[in-house]
Amino acid sequence: MNAFFSSIFQIWRDPRLLTFLQTAIGKSTILFLFALILMMTNLFWWPQHEVGHFHWWPIVMLALTLMTTMPKYRRLWLSIFSFISLFFLPWFILPQGAVNLAQMTHVFIWLIVMVFMMIYIMVISTYRKKKICQYPILNLILLVFIVMAVTSTLSGTMKTNLWTGLSLLTAYFWYFSYTLNSINQYPLKNSLLQITRYLPFWGGTATPYPKGQQFLDAIEAKSSEALAKSQLAGLQLLLLAVIWYAVLLVMEITYHRFNLPSWISVLHGQATHHASIGISWLVLIHHFFFQMLYYAINGHLIISIVRMAGFLAPKNMDKPLVAVSIADFWNRYYFYFKELLVDLFFYPTYFRCSKIPTQWRMVIATTMAAGVGNVIYHYFTTLEYPIHYGLLKSLSMMRVYYFYAAVLSIGIVISQWLTLRRRVIAMSRLHRYVLRPVIIIGFFALLSIFNEPYESLSLVTSLKFLGSLFGI
Amino acid sequence: MKDIENEIRNQVQKLLLAQGDSLPFSNQDSLVMSRRLSSLQLIELATFLEKKYEINFAAVGFNPHDFDSVDHIMALLNKQQ
View 1 (cartoon, chains in turn blue, red):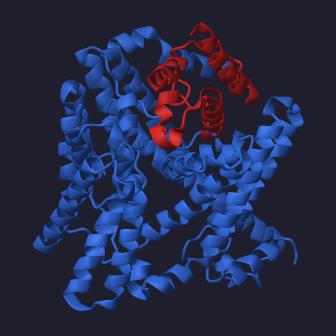
View 2: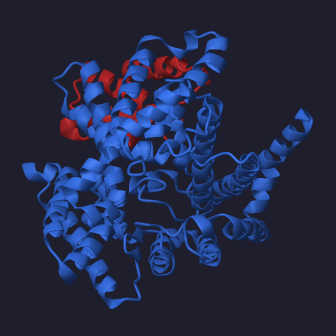
View 3: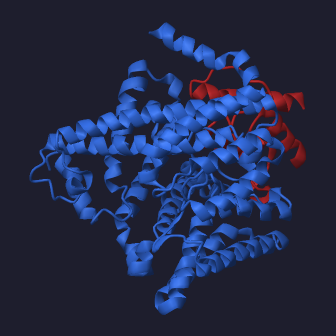
């Protein structure tokens, strides 16, 4: 068996394969294989989860073909196809439905948001020495909250249009924040051009895959050999996504065969009188692994396209079950979300607190990232709640998530302290490969009870479910 | 300059060994993009540079890409001195 797998890995690593992929036939072959698998994944995965019933793979493949045959214009194709996909693919969903750019009002509001971002970049770039311009992301967050508060008091068309504008701005928010974060590294023209690549054609969520312009610059294939390596890694990742989908399918069939109650019904206490402790644990473990597989498949699909486009990006999820600490698990579970919080909240806070002792700098910076940044991110990505319930009520409705973010921050801080004090290399094999993973996965599985920004009814309900797992 | 480079290399090696990574690395090898160094270790490295070479990252701006390889770190130090 081992010989079979090692021979497969040998084929992937064969230098002759890389040489072949640099030829016209080789490029056509890998594009064809990728298209074939992508088409199948489009049939079974994306339609029901992300993009309605639209079959998006032909657009993606057209973009990838042009980027492969004309790599010199890779950035131009990226901008063009990201713009095209805005009209066809509802990557970002507004609370009142998908953004419909066929509607003139939406096009007009979209243009206003674009112009606003351009003006904001120009102001920050021109007056970067002024004190107020040194916190562009913080100012933008405050501005969004102020506009939300004002919008809540309005009514009629004005209110609808302002919410549409806010929904668009928050969909772009973290892409835009990466541009603002690196504004000193690029000339103004380049920073402005980055706007055309927000919500790229390869898909994603409010979290930019793979980060911002600086990251793209660093991972871009600069030779035909590098492109071949990147595309081969893309194909491998797409195959891995298919394998994980098969695992998910088996898991779901088994789950339904045993007629187990749904996660939400158990969490909300509707099924607790039926559910024994064993069933509750099973439902929790299933929920945790379902989410993990779901994020793995989504992330692998997106990153496989990124790699095919010539950007050798790291995986979004990378073997979380072998994590050696809570911080390490978070790093492996959802890499690009973790990076967003680290780049935009952790580093700026840590280095601005230079007069505070190192341990306390870590505590403050971690709380800002895993706590405050995490909550703001989720608040901005579920605008339907502030729209329906107003600013203050929607903020109070997230109280279970505040608890989640607080416990996560504490867990990461403790994990960081332990990592700094007691090095991993000093652990025994049993501790490293058995005990520690069980503790880490157990921590995140139990914490997932509270990882529902709005779905959790109340903290008491979630705590009751937690208690029920231990017979309390 | 060679002494500084050696000191940086030692520091990086210490951080890599701490997580069981004993693979060799050249001055050009990627450390951040390849995920060999985590954000926490990056912070440790930056704090070391802050203290040892008095670099104020709050003023000059912190960019993880400046730490991607030993050569990148040396370029950062040269720029600051």
